[in-house]
Image 1: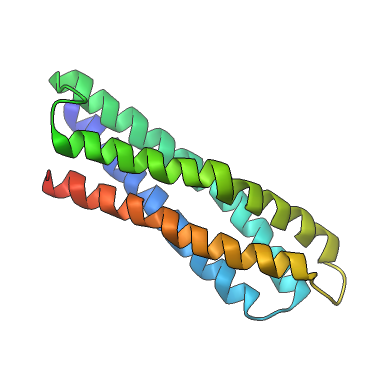
Image 2: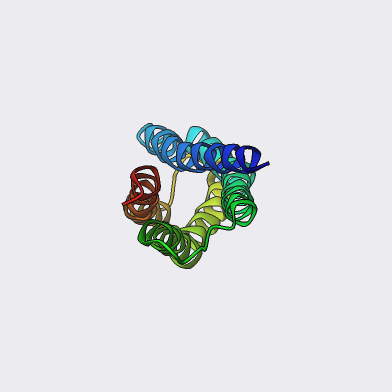
Length: 153
């Protein structure tokens, strides 16, 4: 059963980190077109993919990681690498909850309003830039958590 939970944990990491990186890439790529229809469509895709894949990845990471630890009776705070991995995961999550999700909601609302128009408001571009910068910043602790967990530092 331990291997099942470990597998779920690893799949969750792949889904989460894969989604946050590719979503940022495609959003930036579509934003560069400056075409309201393309940008609005991509923003909708970002919202949907984050809801489906980010939440699924988070759930699998938590269920798999804590499940594996419970099965093997591994103390969650007994090793630096376990503590560091959890802290880095939480740091990234707090950035998403406090900064990125509110920005993404605002961008989605703006995108619905300009989807059929010929102009994207300046507020969208400010939010898009901030979202991309904070998205990169929030991804760093996720990648660091993967490193710490794989190498058991």
